[in-house]
Image 1 (cartoon, one colour):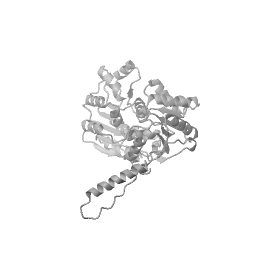
Image 2 (cartoon, one colour):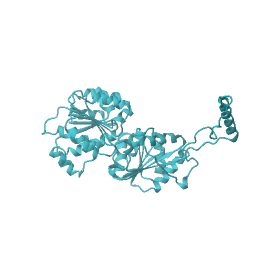
Image 3 (cartoon, rainbow, N blue to C red):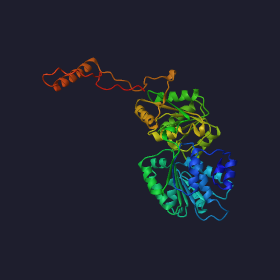
Image 4 (spheres, helix red, strand yellow):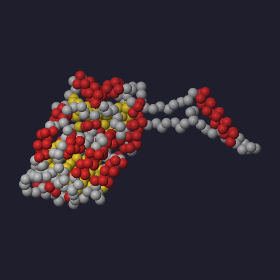
Amino acid sequence: MFSQFDLHERLLKAVAELKFTEPTPVQVEAIPPALAGRDLRVTAQTGSGKTAAFVLPLLHRLIGPAQPRANIRALILLPTRELAQQTLKQVERFAQFTFIKAALITGGEDFKVQAAMLRKAPDILVGTPGRLLEHLNAGHLALNAVEVLVLDEADRMLDMGFAEDVERLCGECAGRQQTLLFSATTGGAALREIIGKVLKDPLHLMVNNVAELSANTRQQIITADHSAHKEQLVQWLLANETYRKAIVFTNTRAMADRVYGHLVALEHKAFVLHGDKDQKDRKFAIERLKQGGAKILVATDVAARGLDIDGLDLVINFDLPHSGDEYVHRVGRTGRAGGEGLAISLICHGDWNRMSSIERYLKQQFERRVIKTLQGSYSGPKKVKASGKAAGSKKKKVEKKTAAKAPAKRKPAAKPLASADGLAPLKKR
C-alpha cells in the first residue's frame, strides 16, 4: 500500500482517488530514497510506473500552504512533446488536493503565450529542452531557484542530440538540491558522462534488466521480400489479428504517410503521427486513439517513448528500429502494467543482421511466423554450397599445403577434413 511511504496526507488522498493500490517495484525502490533527498539514477522498464516514482516525492517536497508564486521550484525535462504532455497530466492528477501548480513548455505552441505563462512562475515546469532554451535565451526563463531537477527518458534525450541543451539547462539549475534521472535503458557513454556531471553521489537503482523489458509481450518476426510485400502483410495483420488498438512503426515520415494512406483507403480507422505534423494534429491523433475514435496509429519513433495508451496490445515494426534500445521502447508501448501484448517485426534481407543483434541484446529469440497466403521467397539466410569444381580445388590446396609441411622420412600426414567451401556452416535459427 502507498501508506507505507511517508507521503503527505493530501498526496495519499489523491493516490486513493486515482485508485492506485499496490506500488510497483520501481516505486517501492525509488520513492523512499527520493523522499530522503538522495540523487537517483534509475533504470526501469517502460510502463513500470516511473512517473509516479518521481512525481510523488517531488510534490511531497514542494507541498505547503497557499502563497504567491515567485520562482520555478522544480524542472522536469523530457525528450518529446507527447511525453511532456502526459507527464503534466500525471503531475496535475497527483497534485489535485494541493496548491501546487504546474505548466508545460514544448515546441508547437504559441511562444508569446508561453512567455506570459512563465511570468506567473509555476511551481513545476515540464518541458522539452529545445523550446526551454529558446525561452532562456529570450530572457523569459529563470531557473536559479529550482530545488529539484528531473531528467526523464534521459537516454532518449541524448540520442536525439540534446546533450548540450541538457547540460546548459542543468547548469542553469546550479542551486538545486536534488537531481533524479530516470530511463528505460542503461544508455551508453553519453549518458554516463551526463550522470557524472549532473548527479551528486547518486544511488543507482536497476529495477529491471534489458532482457526483462518485454516479458509480457510475445515477439514475432515475419520475413518479407520487399516494401510492397510488407504493406500486404501489415494489411493482413490489421484485418485478421485480434486487438483493441495498434501502432505501426516506420523509420521515416514518408513511409508513415504511405502506410497510413493505404490503410485509410481500406477504410481502417487510423491516424498518422510524425515530426512533420503540427502540434494540433499530433494531439488530436493521440487523443482519438486513447478515446477509441481510432484503432490504429502509424508513427515514427516520436511515439516510441512514454506514450501510455490503454488497450494498446499490438505493435508492428514495418521497419526494424536501428538499435536494441529503440526496439525496447517501441515494444514497450504494449504489454504495459502486466497486460499481454504482441509485437511483430517485418524482416527483409537487409534487416536480418540487425534483427539478430537485437535478439542478442535482449538475450531472447523471437518466434518465427509464416502467413501462408502471403509467404514470400525470402525466409532468412541460407547455407551457401560450393560447386564440385570449387570444392575439389579447395581440397587439392589443403592436401598440397599439408604435404609441404610434413617432415622427411615420415608417413604422410592425414588429410584434414574440410567442408565444401572451407567454412563452418551457418547455424539454423
